[in-house]
Length: 204
Image 1 (tube, rainbow, N blue to C red):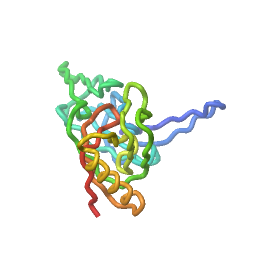
Image 2: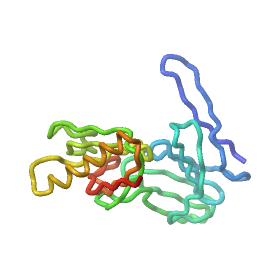
Image 3: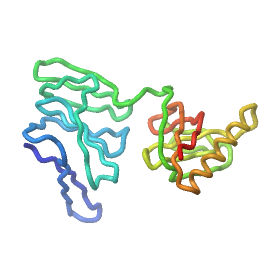
Image 4: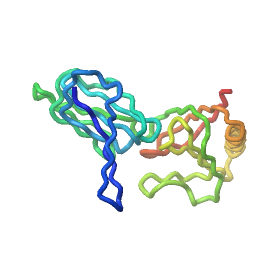
């Protein structure tokens, strides 16, 4: 069985720290290819002799959990494997010389939902928005959840017929943030890490 290790280098020194991230990856697997998913923080894919496995860490790399990733990919020997850094498209080739291409995430424009406790909530001036130019969220209200810390959800508070409904969404988020309550946010995916919230529901 291969042991997978995470390396980190201290910028001011030549020290390299090594961490075993094999965790619950099944024994006797031969890992032939590794790929980092840059769209999803702390997500790694391993091409093995029995298909692809996905490793994820919810605590910034301290612990890892692996599961079989059979989203359109065969349970056969993977010889080459890569994840596109912008689109998240996976390309894999197998021992039988077949090639596969699948998406690791829903395309931009998809209607999605996220559930969690708000850990970040900001209300700011119109036009300041949130995020980098290529993934900019034009919104006055920005919220992040503990379940998906790399993603931001937002909505506008500008004058229009739906302003009252959005003020209601903000009121629910403020209460959830103050009282540590779980919310469900329905949103439209507008970028790799951002989404426009269209509905907020308090779950507890």
